[in-house]
Image: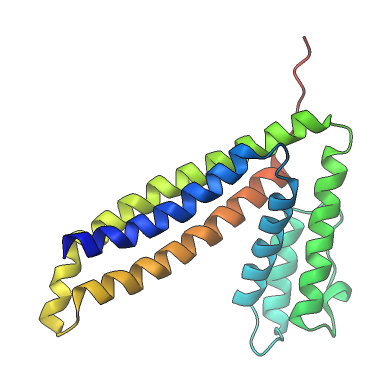
Length: 188
């Protein structure tokens, strides 16, 4: 039984380490960064939509939230009469434009190192936090058997949800840090 519990975290570890190795092995991870941006926008809009549409309150929250990251602010006109997918593309394009504008004068090798350093730091920070969370979950999961639930199945289900949240947090923090951080080049 212990081995089955360990398999849950091992599968997650393989995914995270594969992601880390991909970052370390590539010269440029710019495409991975843009993918994180897209996942971040998609996750945020998914929280605020129902049946592909959002109400006025959600629209204002979305505009306010993303304007904290964008160099060209969103307006209500950008999202009015648009479905979530259209809004997603508009916001994603604005994020990418803001980021590209920020790094346009920075040499490519500096940008590559900047993107790698931020992404790896975010992954490592959230991975350590996730390991602690899974450890706490495992310590108390046996109590579920009193409620006639299979503790291993509950551990797998909750572990999957926590891992999915981990990946979303990684995308969100990577995007936020890259958009808000200032890129400087050290002069020799």
